[in-house]
Amino acid sequence: MLKSGHIFSIAKDNEPAAGCTESESLLDNGACALTVFSIAAGTNISPESYDYPKIWKIEKGSARVLYLTAQAPALSSGDIFIVPQHIPVGIRSKTGCIYSEILLNKECAMNDILKSGNVFALKELLPYKDGKIVNMDLVDGDKTKFVIMAFDAGTGLPEHAAPGNAIVFGLDGEGVIGYEGKEYRIHEGENFKFDKNGKHYVKAEGKFKMALLLVRD
Image (cartoon, rainbow, N blue to C red; front, side):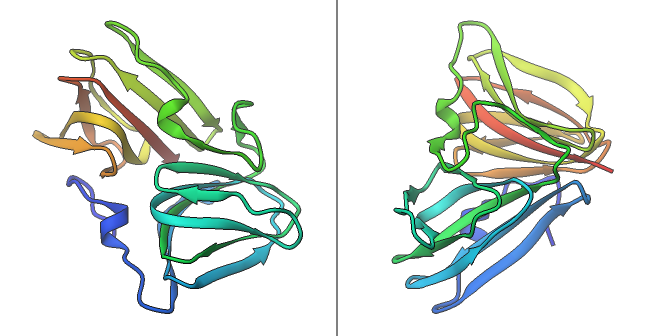
């Protein structure tokens, strides 16, 4: 059970059992779902086709996209892959891999920067700017938002409440999250969960990048 109000690591908390593939739902509001998959060395999830968009974020290890015919691109820790719709796609790992899957309904608007079938790093999609916070919406819908943010040193977001459950992904540097009266330091590869209406703020003592997945009821 995913708990709010503490730093955790999707990668460290979901080591696969030898010879097995595993999955666990972390968030689901009907319009958007976040599931973590753990695939052990030498295993795979066979190709399947879907009518809705999916985003894979590699949390640890390496893998290859598994197509029935096309050449399979390589994936490694920190990579994002936009899963093509309407064609069978799977994933295979020789050494083991842990990844998050964001599944979206058709009504969610996806930023044109996210090209189907492409591999890229989230933290490289937006720059740091002196004295500023830079935001980019990657997915925007009535019940779902997936946004990346770059905080210059000394910047931050004032205390506010989220209108839904949310998970933060640390992408670069170190940030400070205030949540319900306590402060937590989050680093690249670490995660944090807010509950709906939980009061929180973000501060960056140095440069910091994060992604935020928000799901509304």
